[in-house]
Length: 67
Length: 256
Image 1 (tube, chains in turn green, brown):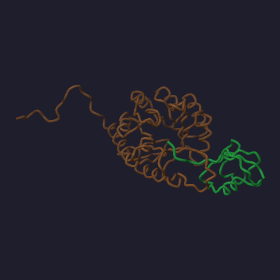
Image 2 (cartoon, chains in turn purple, orange; image 1 turned 90 degrees about the horizontal axis):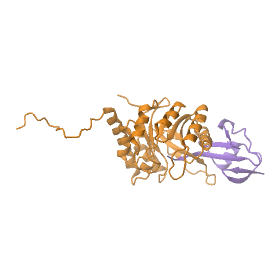
Image 3 (cartoon, each protein chain N blue to C red; image 1 turned 120 degrees about the horizontal axis):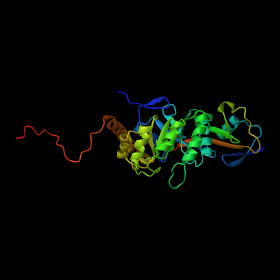
């Protein structure tokens, strides 16, 4: 198991997840979000190739109402 | 005769741009946007609430294929935060047109212009089409146009204040100097004030609170739709000159 910070909160996860696995686990649709991995934007096309590692910091964002 | 708004090469029939914040729920957001006739809607970029998976999302109610989503940087007080937010927005949505706003302080929400200019330069270098929130200063507006912003968006009054156009002279000078669309962003409170902005020659008006915080937001959205069209027509018509004394509308000849 590894510790990962997602949107500011620490989560314990299995150690062999890529970003698409993580989104499925969180029940989030890939096409509605963007992900920042340790302050780097991750292109959606590479979600399968980017593995989540111990101590990683992820931001998962989407569009909400705003002015 | 067509009189379309063109921003970054794309044509729009509507000259009203609306925000999607502060509504009671997504259904009301959707109905108000429909009533406004707007084709561009602003949206914010925020963390997904991962503790509540499957919650409804804005995109379930407003289709990004039907509306142009304009991601904003509301809440950003540094250029770096704004750039970071818009990079994420581009990846989330896949489009380059964005609204940059870098705020100076919580109380006024006035823009921090030096940070805004630097952030705009960075974004433009990265291929973004930047519509920029700015103060009502013609010199700053020109600087933003010269570095390549695709629309200049001076505030009419502080964000969410509903005070109307406080500096019509400044806005008018910005319009006269600009070669890109000028859009009053923030400050409009009611329909007549949207018309004032358009009569000054602005290319469009952007608003959120004036609609969302009306008692009947959907009806106010319709009112704003009419006001922006009326103001545009009045501007293009060329108003009559103002005179000090009366001038009868009925002929004087043939009086009994």
